[in-house]
Image 1 (cartoon, rainbow, N blue to C red):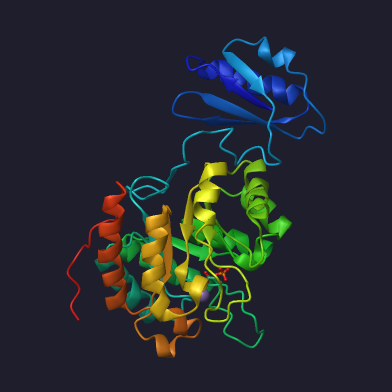
Image 2 (cartoon, rainbow, N blue to C red):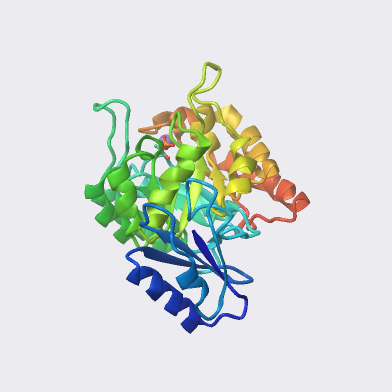
Length: 347
Ligand code: PEP
Ligand code: MN
């Protein structure tokens, strides 16, 4: 059930309703909207007696939830969630969130070189794995805390926000200490203990769609995080496994408007993993922006042939600059924007 407060309800009214819900043995999730606050209720096994809540001051109405998820749905919150990372960087707002960087942090020099290039082209967020979920146990697994420290230096030197993956509950504490957004990768989308742990984090979470996950499964995975009290979740389409063999995965761009119809959470697109091929990254980035995604996450490497992971899908800095110029124009058509280049990169 959702409690819709009146638009003139005070914060004390909201607090009193939450207290009542907690007294009934449930958990209250107050979510402020632009017009009014809605309060989601979790922890109930059956229907809730609405009368006791409806009688409280400031309550507009109690409405049953028609979907299996309660907190990620648009029923709870009409407008898209905007996640504010500080310094004017937001995910879900009119400016597209462009996250760019290498698949993995390989060295300080590598990370700094790529950070300088993506920053110059207008990226405001930097990606790079310090813990890598690799198909083979013999592949490069990431630099772990050393990689996180390098990312932290990149933040300080270039003013970029840091997005990096936690592969398990054990790595979560370190990752949240050094990052601005914690990534949960495709292979972990249904790692329920990791989702619950991410729900207790103070950091926003980037949740990638599993390789064979349906839309409902993606939304229910996000629900795990919100149910623990972390409402800052960004969804990410990164391609799914199909019979198509011309690409590493099939980038399902139709999921973007489908998510936006059902959920208030922002959704970004990863055309790098979504295609697995460098030459497809720019065309699919253009398409992702055109379809209405709230941002992109792009693998960029200055020397992709020497990359320790995902080199074949990493674009070069000059291609990233072109990508940014092109999506800037497409975004404009849709009334959105892409941050300007900060310096003219030399090639
Ligand atoms: C990544 O972003 O580097 C990654 C491993 O992505 P995914 O979980 O989508 O495969
Ligand atoms: Mn990768």
